[in-house]
Length: 158
Image (cartoon, rainbow, N blue to C red):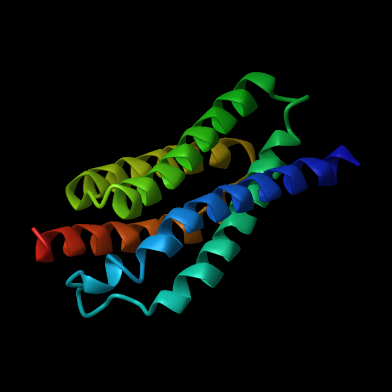
């Protein structure tokens, strides 16, 4: 039973973080974000919710798979999950910095740190569970795109 409960618990945690991030985001879209200059490759606002929902679900399943290996490799699993927790915190922090504080430069720096932490999490997961690591690849790709987008928005509005 734990085999399914651990991933479920982390999926719910990731979706909760996403919901909380979304609260900061949603209230700032109509009165602030809409007025920013954006690059031509900026996706429409409706794209973000389904993409992030899918990414949070995959992240949670991946971390749950790693957590299920705790009894076999407790030290390695603990280290990998610490990286996962840090990147999840940075994920939330980006929304607060960008949409809450309206600090585009700091958000640009922070999203690069987020990308680096996701990559480290990927490497840790890859040593424990190849499928779990592969489940982070879409997240890494999306945050790569988000990094370029964030820096572009900063550049256009500096």
